[in-house]
Image (cartoon, rainbow, N blue to C red; front, side):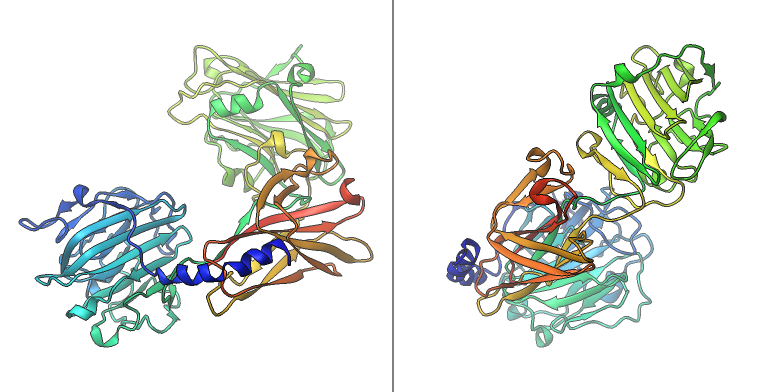
Length: 605
């Protein structure tokens, strides 16, 4: 028996024990920070907390505000905010439709168990990355001493979990409220309540609620309700009895040997840019259809050409000019006869003008109308230095010669040069010296890269020093791995998990050949460190060869399967990655490509 299967099988008894612990109040009390909302009543009765940071952005379709905080209210609800406070907290609880809906401007809300109640304590737990949990401990109805517990957990996926430790209706009550609402007056006011004991969806409406009584509450006492975004602006829900851990598959990194139209690195500020760029060179070698990009560390002083008789481009602050070339150069876009040159480091191909924005932004870069080479930064020639143009031999030079950044008018200018070789189509970006001054109140970020005109897919900001060499060409995604369904294991059942491989390279004869490797341990090993012929983006993400699931078939999607047994403890992590054989792609094992990794967290729902 292999090591992973032994691990999975031997832990069945532990899984039974884990599932017995359906509800566990955890976290730190926030009662001391809460403010009473009605005079004469304690904060645990009628009160609310200050804005509490979630630790992540909570996605909620239909809400324009970026939700990074929440306000916890004593009567069993929490209100999602951008950190500027909650709006529209009703008195005595969210236990009627209008309270769930709110009015225009009211905050989104999650209602765990809302009624006129008071209690012992309120705990907050954000110790698990991507989760924020609030637990109401020893709460009871107004003037009633029989206590119950319940909690709300927010996930960075936009999902919500409401759990109950004991049955609140066992002690008697009127109508309460349970559900999720985007607030702001959502809906029409005619929405009917829902029985959360039966799975369903709101079909695009950001409001789902129940106003239950003791007669219609099958999901209390050691049970819970999960709400998940349905992809159309609403919520799907299902009962989660004895919730332990939500099973998940998480994509880690990306595969190797993809090609993209655009490539860039976005530096948060000048200090980071100075460290990453000063003294280095990036070479874009034209290959007929795109560029082969290389990073040449420590070569800037060797490649920089001091201007001899340059022409000042006369660029002022946030300015742009067109410069005609004596000799065109070849590019993926066809012959380039002129350059649009912006004072803030944008050089567009065949562009009359280019953007004069002083704030580097990936979205603007990827959707630019001019395309071209970017050294995007808020430069300011009025403080000193000049932006000059010169042609010598087959090379056209554009140089930011000792140009200061905005707000930096005393010292520390930047010198950077772009060289266009009209004989080869090659482009050299030579970063002789990049200022590390971060004092500008408008930001000091840099964006360095190349993009064609129009919309371009986003491969994300990359560390050019470690990610290159790479090919900039027609988009061809790297090999990727996905997994479904979620890896659920209970004492009585397991899950047949499908591992789906896409964009596998050709082994030969129009076929793909490879293996999906599953391991009980993870790794992060660049194959480049073993064999320099391998793309630096090929990262081994599995720590062993515990389970091997081969695939072979005509080029196109490939699928392998793994039977996750019953009885696996919640919290067990499994790691998978696809490896494809591709003769001639590199020297490692005769040629291989790797997919992204998948981290699978075994759960019971």
